[in-house]
Amino acid sequence: MASLNLQRNSEVFFSTVDIINGAAAANITPSNTWKLEVLAGFAVTSSSATQDITSLESGTTPDRSQQRFNTAINPVDWNFQVYMRPTGVETGATADGTDAKTNQSGNVMPVADWFLWQSLVSNTAASDGTDYQSVWSTGGKLVTTNVAAATGSHSSRSNFSTAVENHLYFKLDNVVYQVSNATVNQATVDAGIEEIATTTWAGFGTTLKELTGDVRNNAIAAFGGILNDGTSVTANSNLVMGVAHSYHPFGTTNVAASTGTNSFIKNRLSQIEFHHKPSAAGSDVKYVFPVTALSFDYNNNITYLTPEELSSLNAPIGQFTGTRAVTGSATMYLRAGDTESAQFLRNIADDSRTSSAQTSNANLIIGGATTGDPQVAFQLDACQFEFPQLATDDVISMSVNFVAQEPTATKGDGGEVKIFATKSVA
Image 1 (tube, helix red, strand yellow):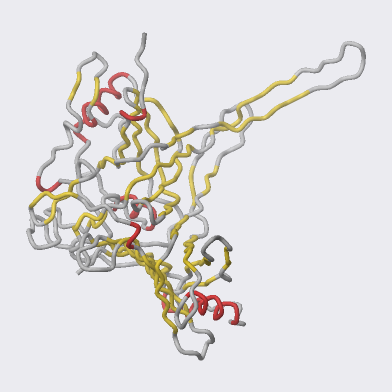
Image 2 (image 1 turned 30 degrees about the horizontal axis):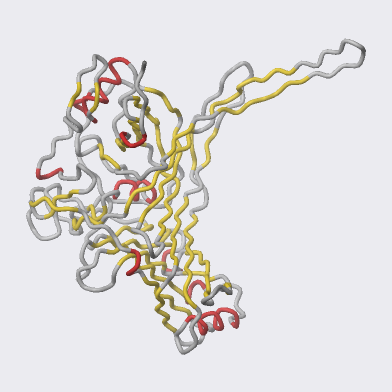
């Protein structure tokens, strides 16, 4: 009897290398392929569009038949959740450097899933197949504007019509699937105060195919597992864990030539900082709140083009990005007093302007803001707040939704959000 395949033994890899079309195991390196330590509940699905043709006639013996046709292959849907884990690699440097907050590749890589964030906001691939191409800049910063190359950071454009395509490998115990031409469409950060900070990633691909034969052996030789002949090979045997490439497994990283453990972020330490002028000519008011819930969402709204030829099982031929949507929400207790949540609600409700985004901003600090705490902060320089809503629970609370917009200074060039990641707050 064939053995069952267990989620507990499954692994997910992100790569710029296309194994299903002939890439060898030797092509898989730490500079172009990264393992993701996903949480339970990940998913990858492939479906088809269908057409039903029915007939219905009169008479005592009518034709009442139905025929179903598969007309097109829909884009592959995938999603998984990972912990937000700062690495400490926050400073750009020349290769083989050993300065503080650097690693020997010279690239800035401040969170373990830096390559996914880059694929979400940039037109620059995370690797050219041989070398890293991080667009994160010194300070552990990633921005949604066009930026030039700098030491340890490649150039980046945030206004792109088509998203960067890579490949995802879902090793479901002993069965391996490849999502070809995978795009990163959405990231949702959840900072529930009783949890560890996580990011839920979602996206698409053009095909989902099982790796079989020699192609499967090539994948197993790189990722580890049981080869077609039953031989076991060590996990990640081809992903050499050298000093320059200590991003495998997901929980370790190399900083200044030493290998250390990536930090988890404790959501209980999170807070938000809102700035809002009650009128265009008014003075800025700063509000700092402890939160009971906090979320951030970035969505590229990617859509795919699929032909509609008759007598063919049509497949997607390309993808395009839509409107960039950067949104968030926060929930806090209702408190009276100056610069407290009740005043924030009052000032938003009394603001008669239809848009106050250019005089309002928000900083979402996921994790601690005190010395030594890891954190990831999302700075929204132009932020439109909706009217806050009250919830009459045992303790009265207030929630507010907000949308990040382009600041006036960078209109047409993006700039909705700046991301800062650090392993240890100074």
